[in-house]
Length: 312
Image (tube, rainbow, N blue to C red):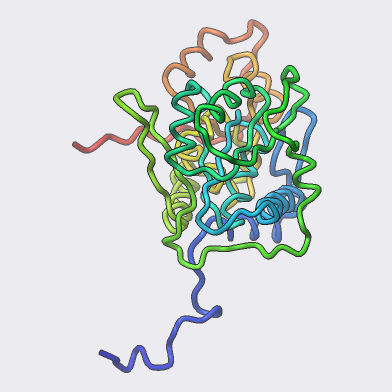
């Protein structure tokens, strides 16, 4: 039934946009273009450069024939390309599937089949298991290899590497933002310890709201956060931290291996303010503290929030 509060008040671009974390990337690049977004070894990307790489990935996927609703999977450590996939894949209208790097070839093959993966991006560190998984899946899919100087070289799984894939992206491809905030943005699979992995779907609205909630709960909105990626990005898209950091234009410090020495080095070099750590990670930090380690004189991070109790 039409009432006076609905007359002439239809949705339009001036009063309504679907909620999506893709808007957080655009905002960060517009407002803080020169702030550092990503650090990995000697690599540095500002928010403007990072956003451009995400958009290039989206256009490259569109140029490769990816359609709205297609699944694009990535098997990678916490490296810049894994962060870029969290924005670039959904910006192509596709659904990002960040695969657990600890799974064997059979489990990965099942995920590729069950998710109907159209394109797979592979960190060369996991080339061997990826090659076996693709063969086991029996699927015809494009594979993009992510080369890196910080791991031993490996034979390619696909026919093109990631940087060439981005460079060849069609410049005129139109980015695909969600038509509805209920559109899927990500697909995450369980570990499959009690059977085949189960896929769980995120939508754009939930990812956006979770990103904002995380930024408030973890106090990312205090100062300029520098977040160390000890939490795997294949764990629920890094608990939405990649999207939350875009909301506050913070800095991501990538970490390929979660070992005490590398964590302490990163904290010292980059003035890390935040990281996530399971008890095993925290115990390893206590046991592996370097002898010459000295506590930062003025830590800029906030204390860890009190753990939330689980309701039963």
